[in-house]
Image 1 (cartoon, rainbow, N blue to C red):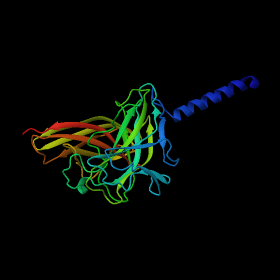
Image 2: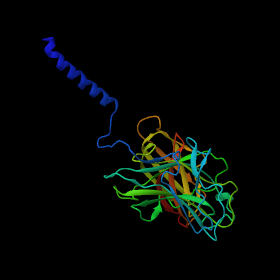
Image 3: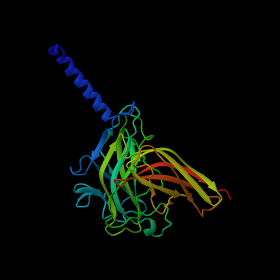
Image 4: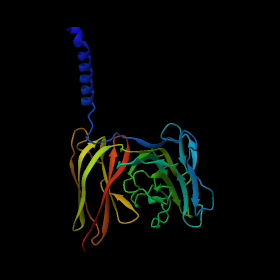
Length: 314
């Protein structure tokens, strides 16, 4: 009798083990595992990247450098850059192409960077339009024209010499159709007036994934005008790996951080989300403002998650 039950017991043990493993690694119904679509840590040479210029009197300044990187030893940079051109000089760094999956995946571009440019407080004059020297990121689908991959007010400018690398993440939804082939372009724009000695833009560890680096789920982000102030509120459903939030205000080309200190995440160490409120005071009546919410992760990465507009009445 025992011998007859042995095969049955063996199968039962296997089934119970499978159930136990499933319970230890739950998945959301209908969810797909994350997948990497593109990654380059700049350790394999040029590796399909190309460079080009527009409006410049000198060749492209993008090149690979050793010793100033996020990991392990190499990065791309245009340092030291020059004020090369009669107006706006554009230096492009373009990735090789990669395919996006079919379906409706949430795709995110992330990269590590630091910069030191004639921009922000260093801009001379500070009222230049467009700003003096800055970097932005673009996306091309199926070999077509490049479009901006983020809010136009997002510019990598100013900074400091020897600054630490910071991770930036941008959602790419709405910029392509699933199944398209994409390319990434890092564009550094400089004027013909002045360049910062030993300044430039450094890029490393570029990655495109079907899941972002944080598991924050934002359910709302709103702004309401009240005389000379704007009351901001947002709510999350989950905050896994989130350190806190920054809110940025812009009226055009220049963005200013509203909160002096990082707004700490309330639910980072537990299940569920939280509600937040912030007041931006001493504003100009009759002015339209754009507010953007930036999520700061525990690994140092930053990602834009929402934007809203509001106009103060006179």
